[in-house]
Image (cartoon, rainbow, N blue to C red):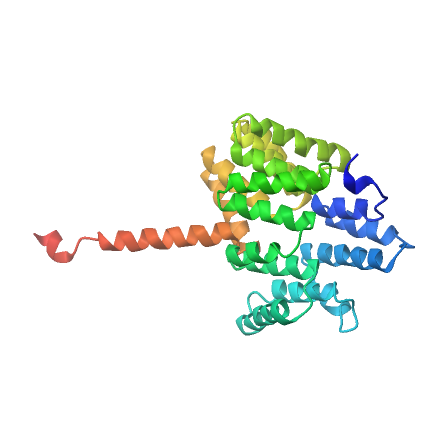
Length: 306
C-alpha cells in the first residue's frame, strides 16, 4: 500500500479525473461532494473545479466567482484565468505578469500560486523561471511538472531522479504513473511498450481522454504502428476536435504518411484555435529563417545578365 493510501482521500476521484484530462467529469465529481469533512477539502475541491473550468477555456466563470474574500489558496486561479483570456491584449497581459511577480516576492506563496506561476512562465517560454518556482514545493504535482520541464530540456537523467522522489512519495499515484510514461517515451525503444501499458491501464480504469489517447498514439508512432496511432488520434479528435496535442500529432502523422493536404488541414485548424502554440511559434520561426536565407541567395539582375 502506498503512503498516500493510509487515509481516505475524499478528493481521490476529483484529482484523478483532472490529471487524466477529463475536466467535465472532474467538475461532476466535485459537485457530488456534498459534505466535505474539513475546510481544506472544500478549498481543494474548489481549486480543482476552477482549474477544470480554465482547462475548458471557461475563464469568465472563474473570474466572476473568485473575489477578494475567496481563500488565499484559490486567489491565484483568477490571475491564471485572466492571463489565459487576455493573451491577445498586450496592455492587460503585461499587467498580469507584473502582478504575478509581485505576488511571488511579497505575497503568500502556496501550491496554487506556484502552479499558476509555473504555467504562465512555461507559456512565456521561460522554463528557467518555472523550474525555479516549482522547487518551492514538494507536492507530487509540482514534482511531475518538474519532470515535464526536464524532459523538454532533454535532461532525462534529472527527470529520472525526480521520478524516484515521486515513487518514494506515492508509487501508485496517477501523476507518478504518467511521469513514468513520459520518461519511457523519451527513452524510446522497448520502453515505448511499457508507456503504452501505463496509458492503457488508465484508460481501462477511468475511460479514454484526449490526453491518454495522445500518449498512446505517440507510443504507436515510435514503434511504427501508424494505423493504431491514427485510430487513437481519430478517437481523440472525436472527443475534442480542438485539443492541441491531437492536432500536432495528426500533422506529424499525416506528413509522415505523405498525406500533405490532410496535414495542412490540421495545421490550419491548429493556427485557428491555438495560434500561440509552441509548435506554431517554432514553425513560423523556421519559415522566417528559411525566407531570410533564401533572400541572401537570390541572384541580382547584374548576375543574371552576365
